[in-house]
Image (cartoon, rainbow, N blue to C red; front, top):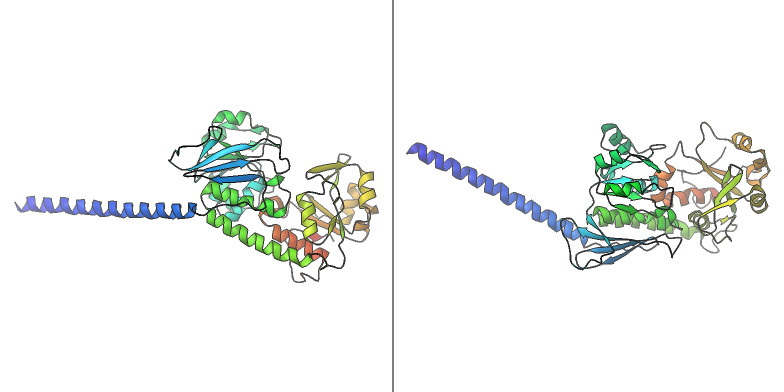
Length: 386
């Protein structure tokens, strides 16, 4: 009888213990659900970005993505729904994406920059080229096998992609492509068009886009608010009438006989304007890349005060190295007066970090164009070439 009672007591204790654990798990699940619900009550509202639009519905979000430089471009349509749900009323031409997204393949450094800024590199399970990859976290994940290399645009390794099996793949549909074969894999492809934005804050605001997909809207809003606040604070220093002289800035280099630059309605032109300078093609109404011959560039930019160059040079870049590339470069005023602004992508995470740090870029340029406005600034990306 005593043994029977002892056994009953043991069973009752185990049952009580299991019930306690079950109750605790239920409490934790409820707390998590409340936290997720609270975060999803935070809305993403794009203010500067022109490439994505959001329409909040009952139980889902309609997301339209388009080329910011072309209003008539193809629209990519997605319906974001809480994971495990299937709300009624979703239009049939919208692809359903469950959120929060748990794993992603990034195709570009610009896309990766959003994850780095948000501190969620662990969500990135695949990347393309690792050339100029600076992030210690992503490099460690590659070494540990937590992130894989999937090849390059036009030559993706679908077997690797299928083995990773991410929730989605961020793509750049207006670049070289190679995405047709990826569609057969069955993993959702979502365009990330931050690189097409024509303003620095517009490009940086795609951090909200990524935050929405990952279900961390509040963190994304907070990060962008800090970027926006500092950028506009610096921009105000060069507002109308606050600088005595607006220097003229040349940009680009010759490659294969052509000079590659961007138009006057571009991200870069806006950045120069906000830094209190004038871009040498400021009257050009194009927002994307521009191909010019040397004579055209020389006629429009030979008297520019500064010349901005970003490249990947093996070794120490100098005025002698610049002249060796093309002797005609020495005829530019910016060359003669040591006004070359330079960033070496081999040494600095330009495309990996710059998209989410427009305020840092702006500070670098302000320090160069108007050193009296930011005398104590330490350059991060841009330095005057020595």
